Length: 308
Image (tube, rainbow, N blue to C red; front, side, top):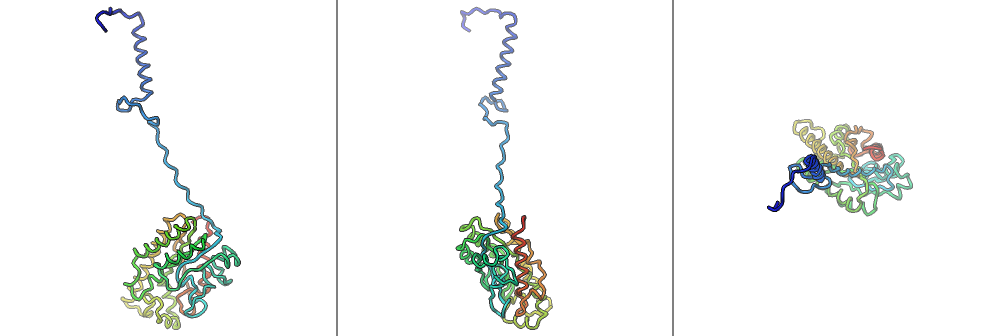
């Protein structure tokens, strides 16, 4: 105050009113929001409130009744040796064939007429996983709603175990095939079958002398070569092939799991106990017509399941 102002005693009750006013002012300022450490800045409007976590993206609903089917893969999907020796027979393919004896996946989903009009088979006998991106590129031109994949046996069926496709390369090729599909058809669904248990096929087929003679033509030499040998080296060779197939199936499962519109068969084809009735009577290795029907059953069960 300046020197010319005379100090006066406050009126009775004035001090109490001043204290109450100060407390009220402090409360207002507190409500306006000094920060927790006593800073004088104004607090953000959402101070003290938890931010809501972003809602997860919903998983796309799986269509159990796709309107068209395209198949990619190897000799199993071409029906090789099911109808005649060393010959493709796509009519009995588990994926797209029209044979009543097989009742293929496409027929089960689309009916005979629909399967004839809206299913396509791009599998090639002898194909390996490295061939799958090219097959997929041809398949997407049809704009299928479902693509079936069964490949990998030829990656393990090499002249020697050292020539088998490395697991990393197998993974890279399969991922490229899926990217090829997704780039063109982001909403298409994929059914992926596991690679069959090649060691079981050897154990069943070696009971046939005819089958073993056909094996000598070069069918899966890493597993079927010298089929009657049971020495340590032969057992180690077959075990290496079996282990590689299991590694391939792990890759198929993992890559498929990363895609919301992909279903893996859960190892059902690998686990299926193919008997002689399900093997070709010409080579005792590829699926017979009955074996093709069993593959169709597994695929249909997986595709039409309400939950994977």
